[in-house]
Image (cartoon, helix red, strand yellow):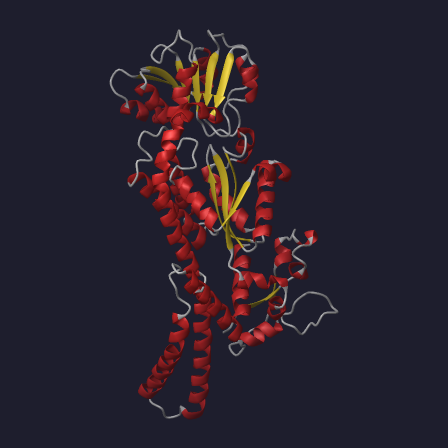
Length: 526
Protein backbone atom coordinates (compact mmCIF):
# COMPACT_ATOMS: atom_id res chain seq x y z
CA UNK A 1 0.00 0.00 0.00
CA UNK A 2 1.64 3.22 -1.14
CA UNK A 3 1.93 5.95 1.48
CA UNK A 4 3.42 9.38 0.82
CA UNK A 5 5.22 9.88 4.14
CA UNK A 6 7.04 7.79 6.71
CA UNK A 7 6.89 8.88 10.32
CA UNK A 8 10.12 9.45 12.21
CA UNK A 9 9.79 9.78 15.97
CA UNK A 10 12.06 12.15 17.88
CA UNK A 11 14.27 10.68 20.58
CA UNK A 12 12.58 12.81 23.27
CA UNK A 13 9.40 10.80 22.78
CA UNK A 14 11.26 7.59 23.62
CA UNK A 15 12.77 8.96 26.82
CA UNK A 16 11.84 7.81 30.29
CA UNK A 17 8.16 8.77 30.89
CA UNK A 18 9.03 9.50 34.51
CA UNK A 19 11.76 11.98 33.54
CA UNK A 20 10.33 15.51 34.01
CA UNK A 21 12.43 16.80 31.16
CA UNK A 22 10.69 14.44 28.78
CA UNK A 23 7.17 15.50 29.70
CA UNK A 24 7.35 18.97 28.17
CA UNK A 25 7.23 18.08 24.51
CA UNK A 26 6.50 20.49 21.74
CA UNK A 27 4.58 19.41 18.63
CA UNK A 28 7.84 19.40 16.70
CA UNK A 29 9.39 17.14 19.36
CA UNK A 30 6.57 14.63 19.13
CA UNK A 31 6.68 13.83 15.45
CA UNK A 32 8.85 14.64 12.47
CA UNK A 33 7.96 13.68 8.92
CA UNK A 34 10.39 12.97 6.12
CA UNK A 35 9.12 12.74 2.60
CA UNK A 36 10.22 9.55 0.87
CA UNK A 37 10.24 9.02 -2.89
CA UNK A 38 7.42 6.61 -3.65
CA UNK A 39 6.28 4.56 -6.57
CA UNK A 40 3.55 2.05 -7.09
CA UNK A 41 5.88 -0.85 -6.28
CA UNK A 42 6.96 0.50 -2.89
CA UNK A 43 5.68 -1.88 -0.26
CA UNK A 44 4.47 -0.81 3.15
CA UNK A 45 7.05 -3.09 4.77
CA UNK A 46 9.81 -1.40 2.81
CA UNK A 47 8.48 2.00 3.80
CA UNK A 48 8.51 1.13 7.49
CA UNK A 49 12.05 -0.26 7.19
CA UNK A 50 13.18 3.06 5.73
CA UNK A 51 11.72 5.06 8.64
CA UNK A 52 14.60 5.50 11.06
CA UNK A 53 14.41 6.41 14.72
CA UNK A 54 16.34 9.57 15.62
CA UNK A 55 17.64 8.30 18.93
CA UNK A 56 21.40 8.83 18.63
CA UNK A 57 24.19 8.21 16.18
CA UNK A 58 25.53 5.43 18.36
CA UNK A 59 22.23 3.51 18.31
CA UNK A 60 21.45 1.00 15.61
CA UNK A 61 20.31 3.25 12.78
CA UNK A 62 19.04 0.23 10.86
CA UNK A 63 16.16 -0.36 13.28
CA UNK A 64 12.97 1.14 11.90
CA UNK A 65 11.23 3.83 13.94
CA UNK A 66 8.12 1.77 14.46
CA UNK A 67 10.05 -1.38 15.41
CA UNK A 68 11.97 0.69 17.96
CA UNK A 69 8.70 2.02 19.32
CA UNK A 70 7.43 -1.53 19.84
CA UNK A 71 10.36 -2.27 22.17
CA UNK A 72 10.13 1.04 24.05
CA UNK A 73 7.92 2.44 26.82
CA UNK A 74 5.76 4.04 24.14
CA UNK A 75 4.37 0.55 23.47
CA UNK A 76 1.61 1.39 25.97
CA UNK A 77 -0.01 3.63 23.36
CA UNK A 78 -0.95 0.58 21.26
CA UNK A 79 -1.65 -1.97 23.98
CA UNK A 80 -3.60 0.25 26.35
CA UNK A 81 -6.67 2.06 25.18
CA UNK A 82 -6.81 5.82 25.51
CA UNK A 83 -8.55 7.14 28.61
CA UNK A 84 -11.46 9.52 28.88
CA UNK A 85 -10.52 12.13 31.49
CA UNK A 86 -12.29 15.12 33.01
CA UNK A 87 -10.32 17.94 34.66
CA UNK A 88 -12.63 20.45 36.26
CA UNK A 89 -13.50 22.97 38.91
CA UNK A 90 -17.05 23.61 40.06
CA UNK A 91 -19.10 25.28 42.73
CA UNK A 92 -18.32 22.41 45.11
CA UNK A 93 -14.52 22.63 44.75
CA UNK A 94 -13.52 26.16 43.77
CA UNK A 95 -14.52 29.74 44.68
CA UNK A 96 -16.21 32.03 42.18
CA UNK A 97 -13.08 34.19 41.97
CA UNK A 98 -11.25 31.27 40.37
CA UNK A 99 -14.11 29.94 38.23
CA UNK A 100 -14.70 33.29 36.56
CA UNK A 101 -11.08 33.46 35.40
CA UNK A 102 -11.44 30.02 33.82
CA UNK A 103 -14.82 30.68 32.17
CA UNK A 104 -14.86 30.26 28.39
CA UNK A 105 -17.72 31.85 26.38
CA UNK A 106 -19.69 29.41 24.21
CA UNK A 107 -18.44 31.08 21.05
CA UNK A 108 -14.88 30.14 22.02
CA UNK A 109 -15.55 26.45 22.78
CA UNK A 110 -14.54 25.28 19.25
CA UNK A 111 -11.27 27.23 19.50
CA UNK A 112 -10.57 25.67 22.89
CA UNK A 113 -11.15 22.17 21.46
CA UNK A 114 -8.65 22.86 18.68
CA UNK A 115 -6.04 24.15 21.13
CA UNK A 116 -6.51 21.20 23.49
CA UNK A 117 -6.18 18.66 20.68
CA UNK A 118 -2.91 20.30 19.64
CA UNK A 119 -1.44 19.11 22.95
CA UNK A 120 0.83 16.08 22.56
CA UNK A 121 -1.25 13.51 24.42
CA UNK A 122 -4.81 14.73 23.72
CA UNK A 123 -6.79 13.10 20.89
CA UNK A 124 -10.30 14.51 21.49
CA UNK A 125 -11.76 17.25 23.68
CA UNK A 126 -14.88 19.12 24.81
CA UNK A 127 -15.51 22.11 27.09
CA UNK A 128 -18.45 22.57 29.46
CA UNK A 129 -18.28 26.08 30.93
CA UNK A 130 -21.26 27.41 32.94
CA UNK A 131 -21.80 29.73 35.89
CA UNK A 132 -21.28 26.80 38.29
CA UNK A 133 -18.57 24.75 36.58
CA UNK A 134 -15.63 24.71 34.19
CA UNK A 135 -14.94 21.15 33.04
CA UNK A 136 -12.69 19.89 30.25
CA UNK A 137 -13.31 16.40 28.88
CA UNK A 138 -10.54 14.77 26.85
CA UNK A 139 -9.53 11.48 25.29
CA UNK A 140 -5.89 11.14 26.40
CA UNK A 141 -3.14 8.86 25.12
CA UNK A 142 -1.60 9.01 28.60
CA UNK A 143 -3.55 9.75 31.77
CA UNK A 144 -0.71 11.42 33.68
CA UNK A 145 0.65 13.47 30.80
CA UNK A 146 -2.81 14.34 29.51
CA UNK A 147 -3.85 15.77 32.89
CA UNK A 148 -0.56 17.65 33.15
CA UNK A 149 -0.92 19.19 29.69
CA UNK A 150 -4.55 20.22 30.20
CA UNK A 151 -3.84 21.72 33.61
CA UNK A 152 -0.97 23.74 32.16
CA UNK A 153 -3.25 24.89 29.33
CA UNK A 154 -5.89 26.00 31.86
CA UNK A 155 -3.20 27.90 33.77
CA UNK A 156 -1.96 29.59 30.61
CA UNK A 157 -5.43 30.70 29.47
CA UNK A 158 -6.64 31.87 32.90
CA UNK A 159 -3.48 33.21 34.53
CA UNK A 160 -4.07 30.98 37.58
CA UNK A 161 -0.91 29.22 38.86
CA UNK A 162 -0.82 25.46 38.29
CA UNK A 163 -0.43 24.88 42.04
CA UNK A 164 -3.70 26.71 42.75
CA UNK A 165 -5.52 24.78 40.03
CA UNK A 166 -4.24 21.48 41.41
CA UNK A 167 -5.52 22.45 44.87
CA UNK A 168 -9.08 23.11 43.66
CA UNK A 169 -9.48 20.86 40.62
CA UNK A 170 -10.98 17.40 40.49
CA UNK A 171 -9.83 14.68 38.08
CA UNK A 172 -11.77 11.58 37.03
CA UNK A 173 -11.07 8.75 34.61
CA UNK A 174 -13.14 6.54 32.30
CA UNK A 175 -16.18 5.04 34.10
CA UNK A 176 -16.10 7.72 36.81
CA UNK A 177 -16.19 10.37 34.06
CA UNK A 178 -19.25 8.72 32.53
CA UNK A 179 -21.08 8.63 35.86
CA UNK A 180 -20.15 12.24 36.60
CA UNK A 181 -21.25 13.73 33.27
CA UNK A 182 -24.52 11.77 33.29
CA UNK A 183 -25.24 13.06 36.82
CA UNK A 184 -24.40 16.59 35.68
CA UNK A 185 -26.76 16.28 32.70
CA UNK A 186 -29.53 14.98 34.95
CA UNK A 187 -29.12 17.94 37.31
CA UNK A 188 -27.90 15.74 40.19
CA UNK A 189 -24.61 17.63 40.53
CA UNK A 190 -26.13 21.12 40.29
CA UNK A 191 -26.37 23.65 43.08
CA UNK A 192 -30.10 23.59 42.37
CA UNK A 193 -30.80 19.84 42.34
CA UNK A 194 -32.77 18.78 39.28
CA UNK A 195 -32.57 22.14 37.48
CA UNK A 196 -33.08 21.91 33.75
CA UNK A 197 -30.74 24.53 32.35
CA UNK A 198 -27.67 22.29 32.58
CA UNK A 199 -29.21 19.79 30.14
CA UNK A 200 -29.54 22.59 27.57
CA UNK A 201 -25.89 23.47 28.17
CA UNK A 202 -24.79 19.86 27.62
CA UNK A 203 -26.76 19.88 24.35
CA UNK A 204 -24.93 23.06 23.37
CA UNK A 205 -21.60 21.25 23.75
CA UNK A 206 -22.75 18.81 21.05
CA UNK A 207 -24.23 21.55 18.85
CA UNK A 208 -21.06 23.65 18.88
CA UNK A 209 -18.78 20.62 18.59
CA UNK A 210 -20.28 19.35 15.34
CA UNK A 211 -17.70 19.59 12.58
CA UNK A 212 -14.88 20.66 14.92
CA UNK A 213 -11.74 18.58 14.40
CA UNK A 214 -11.12 17.08 17.85
CA UNK A 215 -14.73 16.62 18.94
CA UNK A 216 -14.32 12.96 18.03
CA UNK A 217 -16.24 9.73 18.26
CA UNK A 218 -15.53 8.95 21.93
CA UNK A 219 -16.19 12.41 23.41
CA UNK A 220 -19.17 13.19 21.16
CA UNK A 221 -20.61 9.75 21.96
CA UNK A 222 -20.19 10.46 25.68
CA UNK A 223 -22.06 13.77 25.49
CA UNK A 224 -24.83 12.41 23.27
CA UNK A 225 -25.42 9.57 25.73
CA UNK A 226 -25.37 12.12 28.59
CA UNK A 227 -28.22 13.98 26.89
CA UNK A 228 -30.22 10.74 26.73
CA UNK A 229 -29.54 10.09 30.42
CA UNK A 230 -30.55 13.65 31.36
CA UNK A 231 -33.80 13.43 29.43
CA UNK A 232 -34.71 10.05 30.92
CA UNK A 233 -33.97 11.25 34.46
CA UNK A 234 -36.46 14.07 34.01
CA UNK A 235 -39.20 12.19 32.18
CA UNK A 236 -39.10 8.89 34.10
CA UNK A 237 -38.69 10.30 37.63
CA UNK A 238 -39.97 13.34 39.52
CA UNK A 239 -36.49 14.81 40.01
CA UNK A 240 -37.53 17.93 38.09
CA UNK A 241 -40.83 18.41 39.91
CA UNK A 242 -40.71 21.69 41.79
CA UNK A 243 -37.04 22.27 41.08
CA UNK A 244 -35.97 25.88 41.28
CA UNK A 245 -33.64 27.34 38.68
CA UNK A 246 -30.69 29.66 39.20
CA UNK A 247 -32.80 32.59 38.01
CA UNK A 248 -35.73 31.78 40.29
CA UNK A 249 -33.33 31.27 43.21
CA UNK A 250 -31.86 34.70 42.48
CA UNK A 251 -35.31 36.28 42.69
CA UNK A 252 -36.07 34.37 45.91
CA UNK A 253 -32.79 35.57 47.40
CA UNK A 254 -33.58 39.19 46.51
CA UNK A 255 -37.01 38.94 48.15
CA UNK A 256 -35.44 37.44 51.28
CA UNK A 257 -32.95 40.31 51.52
CA UNK A 258 -35.38 43.16 50.82
CA UNK A 259 -36.13 45.31 53.88
CA UNK A 260 -39.56 44.94 55.46
CA UNK A 261 -40.58 48.32 54.04
CA UNK A 262 -40.39 46.90 50.50
CA UNK A 263 -42.31 44.19 48.71
CA UNK A 264 -41.93 42.66 45.27
CA UNK A 265 -44.55 45.06 43.93
CA UNK A 266 -43.15 48.24 45.52
CA UNK A 267 -39.39 47.73 45.06
CA UNK A 268 -37.78 49.56 42.17
CA UNK A 269 -36.16 46.85 40.03
CA UNK A 270 -33.44 47.07 37.38
CA UNK A 271 -32.49 44.06 35.23
CA UNK A 272 -29.23 44.36 33.27
CA UNK A 273 -29.16 41.94 30.35
CA UNK A 274 -32.04 40.46 28.36
CA UNK A 275 -30.44 37.16 27.30
CA UNK A 276 -31.60 33.71 28.40
CA UNK A 277 -30.94 34.27 32.10
CA UNK A 278 -32.23 37.84 32.07
CA UNK A 279 -35.46 36.72 30.45
CA UNK A 280 -35.94 34.03 33.12
CA UNK A 281 -35.28 36.56 35.90
CA UNK A 282 -37.95 38.85 34.44
CA UNK A 283 -40.46 35.98 34.24
CA UNK A 284 -39.83 34.98 37.86
CA UNK A 285 -40.12 38.60 39.02
CA UNK A 286 -43.50 38.88 37.32
CA UNK A 287 -44.59 35.59 38.91
CA UNK A 288 -43.72 37.07 42.32
CA UNK A 289 -45.86 40.16 41.74
CA UNK A 290 -43.35 42.64 40.29
CA UNK A 291 -45.32 44.45 37.59
CA UNK A 292 -42.86 47.21 36.70
CA UNK A 293 -39.14 47.07 36.00
CA UNK A 294 -36.42 48.72 33.92
CA UNK A 295 -34.37 46.52 31.59
CA UNK A 296 -30.99 47.64 30.27
CA UNK A 297 -29.77 45.85 27.16
CA UNK A 298 -27.60 46.56 24.11
CA UNK A 299 -30.56 46.22 21.74
CA UNK A 300 -34.25 46.95 22.25
CA UNK A 301 -35.40 44.02 20.07
CA UNK A 302 -34.85 41.40 22.78
CA UNK A 303 -36.59 43.52 25.38
CA UNK A 304 -39.54 44.05 23.06
CA UNK A 305 -39.78 40.29 22.45
CA UNK A 306 -39.89 39.67 26.22
CA UNK A 307 -42.47 42.42 26.63
CA UNK A 308 -44.75 40.67 24.13
CA UNK A 309 -44.69 37.50 26.27
CA UNK A 310 -45.76 39.27 29.45
CA UNK A 311 -49.36 39.29 30.72
CA UNK A 312 -51.42 42.52 30.61
CA UNK A 313 -50.51 45.06 33.27
CA UNK A 314 -46.76 44.35 33.29
CA UNK A 315 -44.66 47.39 32.40
CA UNK A 316 -41.13 46.81 31.07
CA UNK A 317 -39.14 49.97 30.34
CA UNK A 318 -36.17 49.63 27.98
CA UNK A 319 -33.00 51.66 28.53
CA UNK A 320 -29.70 51.53 26.55
CA UNK A 321 -26.40 50.60 28.18
CA UNK A 322 -25.13 54.17 28.32
CA UNK A 323 -27.93 54.93 30.82
CA UNK A 324 -27.15 51.92 33.06
CA UNK A 325 -25.55 53.85 35.93
CA UNK A 326 -28.35 56.41 35.98
CA UNK A 327 -30.90 53.60 36.11
CA UNK A 328 -28.99 51.91 38.95
CA UNK A 329 -29.20 55.17 40.91
CA UNK A 330 -33.00 54.94 40.78
CA UNK A 331 -33.23 51.23 41.71
CA UNK A 332 -33.56 49.39 45.01
CA UNK A 333 -32.62 46.01 43.49
CA UNK A 334 -30.27 45.41 40.54
CA UNK A 335 -30.09 42.00 38.80
CA UNK A 336 -27.18 41.42 36.40
CA UNK A 337 -26.86 38.58 33.90
CA UNK A 338 -24.72 39.52 30.91
CA UNK A 339 -21.86 37.80 29.09
CA UNK A 340 -19.47 40.68 29.73
CA UNK A 341 -15.97 39.47 30.58
CA UNK A 342 -15.26 42.61 32.65
CA UNK A 343 -17.31 44.06 35.55
CA UNK A 344 -20.08 46.50 34.65
CA UNK A 345 -20.27 47.93 38.17
CA UNK A 346 -17.23 48.92 40.21
CA UNK A 347 -16.88 50.81 43.49
CA UNK A 348 -15.89 54.05 41.80
CA UNK A 349 -18.96 53.86 39.53
CA UNK A 350 -21.41 53.68 42.44
CA UNK A 351 -19.91 55.96 45.08
CA UNK A 352 -21.79 58.98 43.73
CA UNK A 353 -25.20 57.28 43.42
CA UNK A 354 -27.96 58.46 45.76
CA UNK A 355 -28.33 56.13 48.78
CA UNK A 356 -31.38 53.93 49.39
CA UNK A 357 -32.80 52.73 52.69
CA UNK A 358 -30.98 49.63 54.04
CA UNK A 359 -28.58 49.65 51.07
CA UNK A 360 -28.93 48.98 47.37
CA UNK A 361 -29.18 45.25 46.59
CA UNK A 362 -27.10 43.74 43.76
CA UNK A 363 -27.86 40.14 42.71
CA UNK A 364 -25.25 39.06 40.17
CA UNK A 365 -25.77 35.67 38.50
CA UNK A 366 -23.10 36.14 35.83
CA UNK A 367 -19.81 34.27 35.52
CA UNK A 368 -17.50 36.14 35.12
CA UNK A 369 -19.14 38.54 37.55
CA UNK A 370 -20.80 41.75 36.34
CA UNK A 371 -20.50 43.37 39.78
CA UNK A 372 -16.97 43.75 41.14
CA UNK A 373 -16.28 42.41 44.63
CA UNK A 374 -15.12 45.91 45.59
CA UNK A 375 -18.73 47.14 45.44
CA UNK A 376 -19.43 45.23 48.65
CA UNK A 377 -17.08 47.64 50.42
CA UNK A 378 -19.60 50.48 49.99
CA UNK A 379 -21.80 51.16 52.98
CA UNK A 380 -24.81 51.59 50.74
CA UNK A 381 -24.48 48.35 48.77
CA UNK A 382 -25.11 44.65 49.42
CA UNK A 383 -23.79 42.25 46.78
CA UNK A 384 -24.79 38.62 46.21
CA UNK A 385 -23.55 36.23 43.54
CA UNK A 386 -24.28 32.68 42.32
CA UNK A 387 -22.44 31.11 45.26
CA UNK A 388 -24.81 32.87 47.66
CA UNK A 389 -27.79 31.01 46.18
CA UNK A 390 -26.95 28.04 48.44
CA UNK A 391 -28.97 29.76 51.14
CA UNK A 392 -32.11 29.53 49.00
CA UNK A 393 -31.73 25.98 47.71
CA UNK A 394 -30.67 24.43 51.04
CA UNK A 395 -34.29 24.45 52.22
CA UNK A 396 -35.48 21.85 49.71
CA UNK A 397 -32.25 19.94 49.18
CA UNK A 398 -33.05 17.07 51.55
CA UNK A 399 -36.34 16.34 49.82
CA UNK A 400 -34.73 16.57 46.41
CA UNK A 401 -31.90 14.20 47.46
CA UNK A 402 -34.49 11.49 48.03
CA UNK A 403 -35.88 12.03 44.56
CA UNK A 404 -32.37 11.92 43.13
CA UNK A 405 -32.08 8.28 44.17
CA UNK A 406 -34.77 7.45 41.63
CA UNK A 407 -32.71 8.99 38.85
CA UNK A 408 -29.47 7.25 39.85
CA UNK A 409 -30.63 3.85 38.57
CA UNK A 410 -31.17 5.43 35.13
CA UNK A 411 -27.71 7.00 35.29
CA UNK A 412 -26.18 3.59 36.09
CA UNK A 413 -28.05 1.86 33.25
CA UNK A 414 -27.07 4.48 30.67
CA UNK A 415 -23.46 4.45 31.91
CA UNK A 416 -23.21 0.69 31.44
CA UNK A 417 -24.56 0.99 27.90
CA UNK A 418 -22.01 3.69 27.03
CA UNK A 419 -19.11 1.70 28.48
CA UNK A 420 -20.20 -1.38 26.48
CA UNK A 421 -20.32 0.72 23.30
CA UNK A 422 -16.88 2.18 24.02
CA UNK A 423 -15.42 -1.27 24.72
CA UNK A 424 -16.79 -2.46 21.39
CA UNK A 425 -14.76 0.27 19.65
CA UNK A 426 -11.53 -1.08 21.09
CA UNK A 427 -11.16 -3.89 18.55
CA UNK A 428 -12.31 -1.89 15.50
CA UNK A 429 -8.79 -0.77 14.44
CA UNK A 430 -7.50 -4.35 14.67
CA UNK A 431 -10.43 -5.66 12.63
CA UNK A 432 -9.79 -3.03 9.97
CA UNK A 433 -6.04 -3.64 9.86
CA UNK A 434 -6.41 -7.42 9.75
CA UNK A 435 -8.79 -7.18 6.79
CA UNK A 436 -6.41 -4.79 5.01
CA UNK A 437 -3.47 -7.15 5.64
CA UNK A 438 -5.36 -10.16 4.30
CA UNK A 439 -6.61 -8.22 1.26
CA UNK A 440 -3.09 -7.04 0.43
CA UNK A 441 -1.83 -10.61 0.69
CA UNK A 442 -4.67 -11.98 -1.45
CA UNK A 443 -4.34 -9.28 -4.10
CA UNK A 444 -0.58 -9.76 -4.30
CA UNK A 445 -0.87 -13.53 -4.74
CA UNK A 446 -3.59 -13.20 -7.38
CA UNK A 447 -1.48 -10.66 -9.27
CA UNK A 448 1.50 -13.03 -9.24
CA UNK A 449 -0.67 -15.90 -10.41
CA UNK A 450 -2.18 -13.83 -13.22
CA UNK A 451 1.24 -12.64 -14.39
CA UNK A 452 2.29 -16.27 -14.87
CA UNK A 453 -0.93 -18.00 -15.91
CA UNK A 454 -3.33 -15.27 -16.88
CA UNK A 455 -2.50 -14.99 -20.56
CA UNK A 456 -5.50 -15.95 -22.60
CA UNK A 457 -7.76 -16.10 -19.53
CA UNK A 458 -11.14 -14.52 -20.27
CA UNK A 459 -12.80 -11.91 -18.03
CA UNK A 460 -15.27 -14.43 -16.65
CA UNK A 461 -12.52 -16.74 -15.44
CA UNK A 462 -10.53 -13.84 -14.00
CA UNK A 463 -13.60 -12.72 -12.06
CA UNK A 464 -14.11 -16.29 -10.81
CA UNK A 465 -10.54 -16.35 -9.48
CA UNK A 466 -11.10 -13.00 -7.73
CA UNK A 467 -14.40 -14.18 -6.23
CA UNK A 468 -12.96 -17.52 -5.12
CA UNK A 469 -9.93 -15.99 -3.39
CA UNK A 470 -12.06 -13.37 -1.65
CA UNK A 471 -14.41 -16.10 -0.50
CA UNK A 472 -11.51 -18.13 0.91
CA UNK A 473 -10.18 -15.06 2.80
CA UNK A 474 -13.62 -14.29 4.22
CA UNK A 475 -14.05 -17.91 5.37
CA UNK A 476 -10.65 -17.87 7.07
CA UNK A 477 -11.37 -14.51 8.72
CA UNK A 478 -14.80 -15.50 10.00
CA UNK A 479 -13.49 -17.19 13.17
CA UNK A 480 -11.03 -14.44 14.19
CA UNK A 481 -13.63 -11.74 13.49
CA UNK A 482 -16.19 -13.49 15.69
CA UNK A 483 -13.66 -13.54 18.52
CA UNK A 484 -12.98 -9.83 18.08
CA UNK A 485 -16.60 -8.84 18.60
CA UNK A 486 -18.49 -8.57 21.88
CA UNK A 487 -21.20 -6.36 23.36
CA UNK A 488 -19.25 -5.64 26.55
CA UNK A 489 -22.01 -6.90 28.86
CA UNK A 490 -19.91 -9.89 30.01
CA UNK A 491 -16.63 -8.91 31.66
CA UNK A 492 -15.09 -12.34 30.99
CA UNK A 493 -16.05 -12.18 27.32
CA UNK A 494 -14.65 -8.67 27.03
CA UNK A 495 -11.38 -9.75 28.66
CA UNK A 496 -11.05 -12.67 26.28
CA UNK A 497 -11.84 -10.45 23.30
CA UNK A 498 -9.10 -7.99 24.21
CA UNK A 499 -6.64 -10.88 24.70
CA UNK A 500 -7.58 -12.19 21.26
CA UNK A 501 -7.05 -8.72 19.80
CA UNK A 502 -3.58 -8.41 21.34
CA UNK A 503 -2.65 -11.91 20.13
CA UNK A 504 -3.68 -11.09 16.55
CA UNK A 505 -1.78 -7.80 16.70
CA UNK A 506 1.36 -9.73 17.67
CA UNK A 507 0.91 -12.56 15.15
CA UNK A 508 0.34 -10.30 12.17
CA UNK A 509 2.60 -7.43 13.27
CA UNK A 510 -0.30 -4.96 13.37
CA UNK A 511 1.02 -2.96 16.35
CA UNK A 512 3.32 -0.93 14.14
CA UNK A 513 0.55 -0.02 11.71
CA UNK A 514 -1.85 0.87 14.52
CA UNK A 515 0.77 3.14 16.08
CA UNK A 516 1.51 4.76 12.73
CA UNK A 517 -2.20 5.56 12.36
CA UNK A 518 -2.19 7.24 15.78
CA UNK A 519 0.87 9.27 14.85
CA UNK A 520 -0.65 10.24 11.51
CA UNK A 521 -3.82 11.39 13.30
CA UNK A 522 -1.77 13.67 15.58
CA UNK A 523 0.09 15.07 12.55
CA UNK A 524 -3.21 15.88 10.86
CA UNK A 525 -4.52 17.58 14.01
CA UNK A 526 -1.40 19.75 14.27
